[in-house]
Length: 335
Length: 171
Image (cartoon, rainbow over all chains, first blue to last red; front, side, top):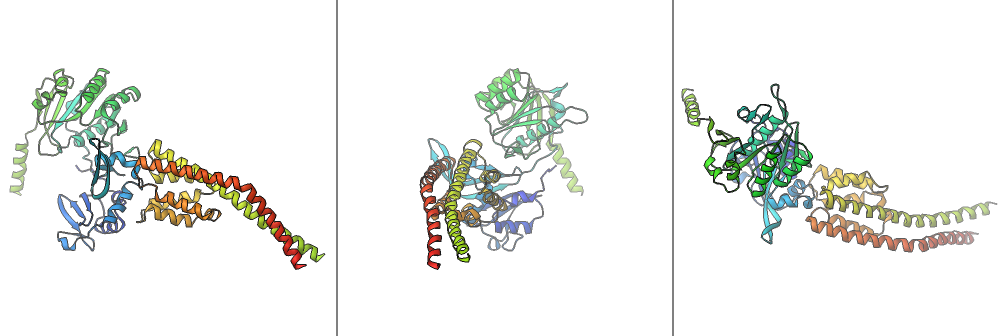
């Protein structure tokens, strides 16, 4: 299910004037647009429904590079003015990380000349490459797993495991929304979200651009360990959600939170349960059975749940994708 | 009788003209003071809240007596995103401001420099630049205030003297 917000205006307003006019003439809504890539002196590229196109000189999409509209360096500067709201100083930290979140939760990746100091990125100048990634929410993608993490009137401490780009964050975001909102059969929980990289809430000027439910409190841009402690002290959450725990500090903070009687949902990079057990930091939490549910996502697929394990590592849910694939192939053939 | 009335009108006119020039100096000081406060406000907005510049301008539009229209128009123009950079919008809105006529040429150059160095710097440089601007405007105000009383007295005296002189000349 694609919950793409159809507000093309939010993306258009960060494009340089000429490109904005042409994109507006080409598209009525954002549906299907995944990326808009701007490179100084190169054609503007739009990734639309999985395919890459150039924006034509006379609007429209084309595969012919000779008919493509090229972006100038001054247009990149203009776009950067819009993206940073004419306030480069306000986005220094984001520039260091290489992206800026704009209104609507859309993320703009930036590349240019890196200023390196004391072993870390100090700033970025001469920005010449922009990648506007249009935000999409997969509303309801976690519905299937919610019953597996529910426990009486609460939830189990849950860890989402998958390699990068398999939809951990998307799944976590949807879980937060569902748990926070509740439904006819289940009450909503107060969820504290520590959103260190603004990936969950995609906050713009403090307001979450992604729907994280009506009972969620978001600490945006806050380091995970400190954020978890702050939420425990200040917001009385029933559940704390964090993305990508990995350091010793994160694990200690998560452990502290669990000991306070607050449930934790977290994500971690990993291939399988064995991989998680062998991680020096998380391994001890697994051995202590701090998490009661482990949700493993299918490698190479986006947002597909492979298996769910309990605290002892026993499989309580397994999805057979081969059967699904065979079924779908059969469907195509018979059609 | 008519001559007397004429003399009275001319002398009053001279005094009023002198008064206008003296008042112009006083208003200049008020405007500079307001701009000094605005610079302090911008500094605070960047230092403590990391607000973007358009938001800071919107807040400034609610304050002040002379420059609120300028800040409001700046906010509107920045929100329109019409392809102009901040500096060119700043300069064109300075031209459209009625209070700019009370300022000296040097004041205007100073304000243009402020516009040129706002928004496009990293945080540390932006704050440092604003500190320099605050110091400069403080000394401008100090200089304007120290010379104001003498200049006002000269304006009043010159106005009155000019009125009397023209009256004598006409009689």
